[in-house]
Image (tube, rainbow, N blue to C red; front, side):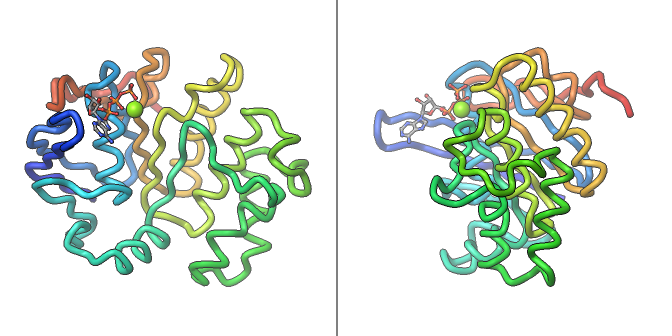
Length: 226
Ligand SMILES: Nc1ncnc2c1ncn2[C@@H]1O[C@H](COP(=O)(O)OP(=O)(O)OP(=O)(O)O)[C@@H](O)[C@H]1O
Ligand SMILES: [Mg+2]
């Protein structure tokens, strides 16, 4: 469970308060969609939840751990072991193959006993076994994102964060990736938190949180069941 208390982010540059004291909780095992117009604070929020960035004020408490009270090194280790993160632009390592990209987080964490077996299992899960030996430059956008999702799951995270994971894909691949995230939530028993402005996919959320101008505007049940 993640508890968010009075979470505030002020950017000195431009003198913008991007998040204005957010209070929310995220229950384990659910699928959350964070929606809102461009500039409403989705990316800022996700970056504070996932420990990519630090808040100006407030707390993010993950299963009892006050994330931002951790020092840089502890935070990095905590993230590596508990969080998976997926980005809009995939960020695969360009000189590593699909398989090697998925192996990478396991090499750092040493949390997984048999990394190669885990990596192959994940490639299968995301339907990308045929990409094991390919470099990212020879993959399509949808393929790169599937590898990125497999990589994010490598260390068996409790939480999977994704920021606009389908913004750069064509319609068919958007749908495939959302269906995949949905399946993963069940099969990997991970809590999924996805930021998107794409209305077509709000229905995937058990809970849809809408931000407006740095505040929580609405918290609603999503449409998708089972
Ligand atoms: N690094 C930064 N420095 C200064 N201001 C920033 C920074 N990042 C975001 N902002 C500002 O904070 C506000 C929220 O931005 P954020 O990127 O969180 O919105 P968003 O909802 O993710 O938007 P989008 O849908 O366009 O991705 C905006 O006013 C933005 O200009
Ligand atoms: Mg954003």
